[in-house]
Image (tube, rainbow, N blue to C red; front, side, top):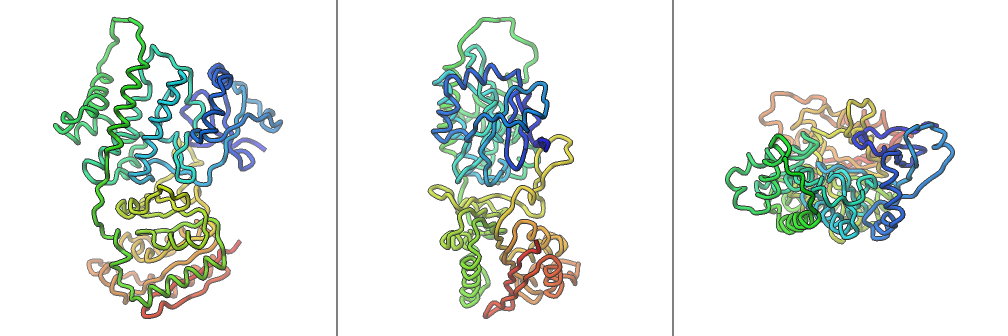
Length: 456
């Protein structure tokens, strides 16, 4: 059995991530082994793991790995496998803010032990039980006090600038971030803020001056050695204080108050909840995805019924921000525009994993969703259903008919007829892909709740 190279692991010359027997391994090359041995001898890795700051990792000597014949590889490390793998452009404002503060605290802790990070990538942070955790052990290195903070600009562009953009303009950073996987550049933020940048000391020193200094050509003739440890500590503490004050304004949006403004009758709403409760209680799924979750009402019902891991998916940041994740290890809000999904990251790689391939759930909820994608976004019905079915083994989907008032309003300014959008086609496709399909009428409504079990 051969190691499968992770397509997103291509930047670091000190090692690489591999998938092997459904486990996660990282190679450590000869050019990093001195740093690795130093940190291992100082017991840094174990200290960080014990404090839940670093992903659990351990050295392995499996013959199957050693026999792969990597000339430059010195050791292999196995990492704990996380249940869900997400990217910064899929996070909420609060998640990115939490990750940024974690990253800064992580660096302060390391500096006290004369350790530094050679970069400041937001992709080095993941969420475990909704708590940030650092995943890249090869980013740690022995502190060189004569070298300035190497990851300063990267931290600004991948953490600070997207947060400033959302906080100052009250707009989600996600689509911009997805379009540029390195975040929002300092130059972009300077142009966006204009004169406002001069009213913030933190933005002035961390963004404006950093950008102008990095853009100057030539090397200073002065070669005087100096310690940068104190200045790095100052910058980190300044950034932390500034980021802690950033907020995403909580305004009402089209969907953020959906539970109170939807067109369901009370009878229909109660019936919908009862259908959900019945199937969750019967199937007892461990994991669930709530697609188009709005304010995550049904995610919270599922949590109360014992579901342990829930992704609440939506493109409305106001909805997602309402969910929150403090003192909540079960429901994880995640940003996604289903008409413009992200792919996995990598460089010219045919093995990129799509959004669907990164996630696999026991159960899915797709309530009041499909008509939006089919009619508003002109995505074919079978494509929408195929996407949903790929995400989970079982699930509940809602069909809203053409004569529903919501559908009528959506079609008002459309020239397309959407003749294929009907219950017959809906059920026909499901029955081709699933071995169990049950239709439930919502009392007081023409809407249907349909349960499916995928063919295995």
